[in-house]
Image (cartoon, rainbow, N blue to C red):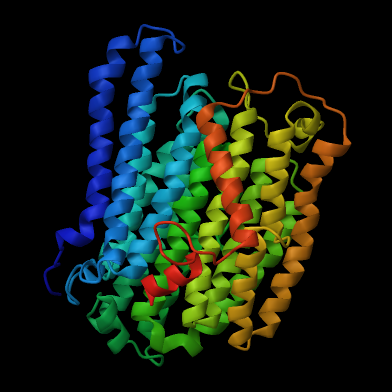
Length: 499
């Protein structure tokens, strides 16, 4: 195997995020530790923690700028030669920007939450940045071993984040479950990579595309194991069981981040691998992707109905949404690829917005998790109740929201590929999930309040909820309207960037 070629241009976003993590830890040592004897509400303590959040936010914004610079500059859009093991092309740049944007929203959701629960800020922000750095590596990878390393860099910090609230037994238990199940997925993935290398002698995507043949049993076994690893990390049925337990036990801002770091990263990476390495095996892979997509939609929607925990319900909803996004892999067309990226962007907005409301309502370290806890919320917090209702309707795909248009784009691309049966499954899943999502608005608007002492919204939490709500409405009513700074509608810009 040839020596790995690692162009710095392609490593730019990951390098910025990693340096941001180091800067956060240094800032914590220099500023926050001096005030460790002060109360969390003291002015010095608040300013020090605000500084940590600002350093982390700047690192993420710079990483987004570095990534999108590759889209704006046609020369930089292909940073890295065709023989490089990392390449910051348009697809990688847009994917990295999407993950970083979602991570930035989750970071802003975390600031007050961490202070209330007396959770260490610096280590938390550093882990968040390091996970995004791993995502940046895996999303730009052009080699299976680099991909595996990137997945590990992205996943290992999330296990620590899931168990970060060490005072809660459920959090530490969820972190352990997340680590063990992820280790299984990583082992299966690397074993599949080893079999592929044994069969073809290649690990680069382009070389694999040329060397893979459908009648090679060893190569197809390796490919099957690799796809199982991807399905596990994306929480696609039947490799999804880790998700509800991990999401329910994790601190709520971490649960929001898992929807970005786990689901979106795995699906975007799988899209890249299919495009660059497996494009010639489309007819062989289509039934497999069809089964994964349909099973995820049906089971995710059905299981969300019976959940009483809001976090667990949204975890099952994420399984279903991963199935909707995977429909694009079945269609395997250029329009389907654009629809998948757009869908995942809207998915991040809907999920982070919904979890933002849940985070905001937490008070005194007590999370609001059960559906009964939201009873009467429209009377005490009418704005938050309206925002949560908006996000839930968008998750269900109701017209007038971004969720409807994103799902319509996926359905249209899938119909164009002749997969009417899968679209029928998607429509059925949408109807079933609507019943699950409406349970919360019914509790908020039609039942008397049972819970006292809900938390007060802070500026950062309201900012995140507001950004998500405005974007969900804007993209629902004017999905392809020209956006400032892009010079085009979002769909057109994605199409030109990844085309």
